[in-house]
Length: 119
Ligand SMILES: [Zn+2]
Image 1 (cartoon, rainbow, N blue to C red):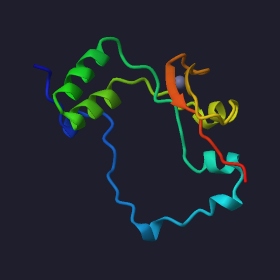
Image 2: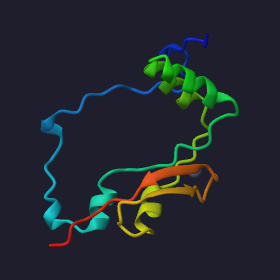
Image 3: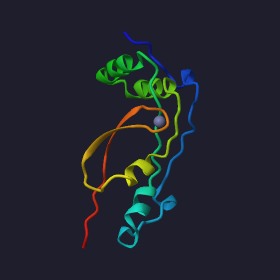
Image 4: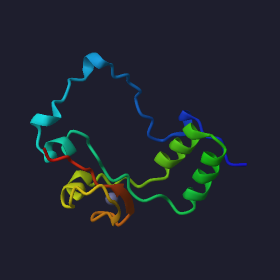
């Protein structure tokens, strides 16, 4: 049985906040360039997992312990912070899945390119 984690054991607890519709403006995507649409969402490399953490995280996920898995994942990473939008924008917007090593930390990141319809 995997060690059960609580938020008290998370070395970097995150402040919880609630975002409501009043906090979020509406984006008129038709008026925005694909680059601005991609950059509207911040994407950062989460960095490499500590050795052996993935197995425990997988067990927690299989057990339905999502909060514990998320906490262990956060606690087991050496934060990288590479701006992943730079990677997304350097590829075609073809909707294809990619596995790209992070240029900063080398972690293999799986991601899917966006697709933009052309009128
Ligand atoms: Zn990285």
